[in-house]
Amino acid sequence: MFIEPDIREGTRGWIEVICGSMFSGKTEELIRRLKRAKIAHLNVEIFKPAIDTRYHHQNIVSHDESSIASVPVKNAQDILNLALDVDVVGIDEAQFFDESIITVCERLAEKGIRVIIAGLDMDYTGKPFGQMPALLSIADFITKLHAICMQCGSIASFSYRKNEKSSQVIIGEKDLYEARCRSCFTKGMAEQTLNVQR
Image (cartoon, rainbow, N blue to C red; front, side):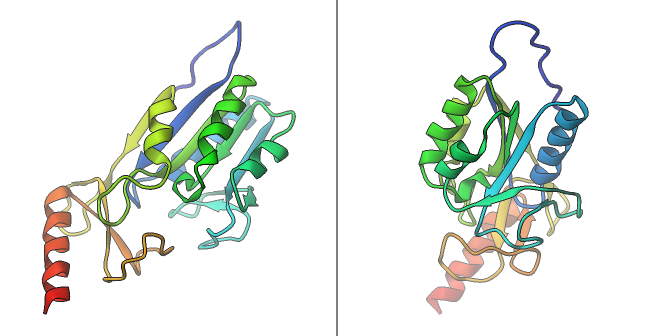
């Protein structure tokens, strides 16, 4: 479990990244950290990409239905304009933001703001997703979470898409995705390739 650093002097700005596959508890962990910041009487602003409307148009909601109020934004630059007079900024589903998310997070941290980001580190093909690799490289703290493989019950790091659509971004839940271990993910991808070739 991540415990916040005890920084008593100097700047407090830093970047935390929470990553992992779908169903690994990334949003739940983000919400936990943000609620702790609120308990500490810190000013908190929370953002999510406007395209993510799975559970709620405004709130960030985890798969276990924990939720916290947030502001949907169309692009990362909006976060800089809206994050005024805050101590902590939370950002969910960071993989959906454009490349300016990196500069936005760095600027916020340089202002002394604690930035907590959650996102998928890999897409449905097992490749690095969006700006997440760059965010991981500039992070001061990284937490990689794991799900449980929905095929064999092992530790899962991959988000397997159950249909064969090729668009990188298809927002969905258990109807479209399942967490898989490396072995079950590789097997499923091979089966999909065979189906396409038939």
